[in-house]
Length: 334
Ligand code: KG4
Ligand code: ZN
Image 1 (cartoon, protein in one colour):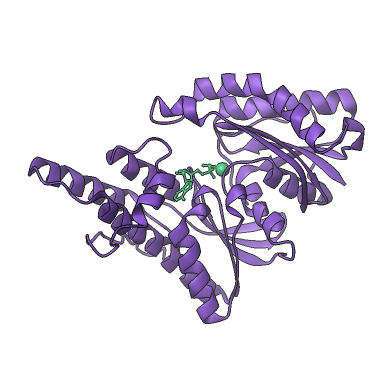
Image 2 (cartoon, rainbow, N blue to C red):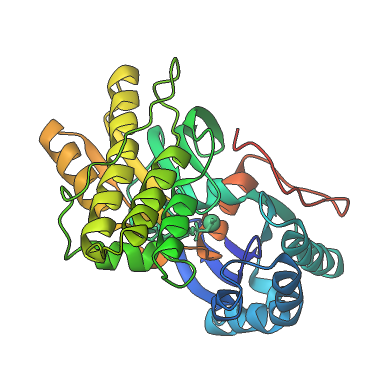
């Protein structure tokens, strides 16, 4: 069964055609990042306007590249939550219009569930249950994926998301938005032991994260050295900071897996592209004899192929919507 998938939750307008939840027949992403970079972050008003312009050509292109017409499509999956409300509404209204005019069923899909599903594309044999670390620009969760559409949150961030923590520190070092990617690259040639940074712990919640203290610590380190007229080696600051963030993520994730007796671990979301996170978890899982899955780098960021994958499983569980479907800025993954 072919799913036409639409994604517009943040600053990427994307459409894809996916067969049976696993085979990507086309995936088109129109990124607005260059425009938002001028402002140092996503400007919601601009994002909505760009989605409105891009959504029709991007969808047409996805159908064309898949060599499909609408009559070959069994369901239309659309991201309806969470995200920027004005941005989400563009995709939701477009998908509703298409569903209404063609009679093709409409499937609302949760953005973070879709990030998890990017692993069904990269790891064709992967099936739930597994424990997933979902780390994006807006969320950091440890999720028990009991089944394709049944999830339980085991831990989450109390303040900044991991991607946000990377982006804010990168910005303080003068890197363009979204700085997480560049910080990761610069860190490759630095010494992770050069600066001691804290490992914030959330008391009585061993699987929860807190990144704001860590982010403040690195910003203070930069300010203090600037006041003294010293220049710190950027590579070393990036490497020490990346090591600290990844250490927090990995420690809690491994502890949760140990405590829950899970031996199949998965990562997802934009930050799952981080080289140190990928390497550390691969090594830790191999050492313990656990299975480990991560999405190919091209599926880590926002795209619609992952929406087509999750949308297929949502459809199979009967999660379809009517034309009264709305968009929501926040919604639990559960
Ligand atoms: O999942 P995503 O594309 O969008 C959201 O749903 O939020 O995640 C974007 C986030 C940004 O904060 C970006 O800096 C971060 O993922 N990111 C990275 C890397 N690549 C993307 N963070 C660290 N290392 C990377 N290699
Ligand atoms: Zn995302």
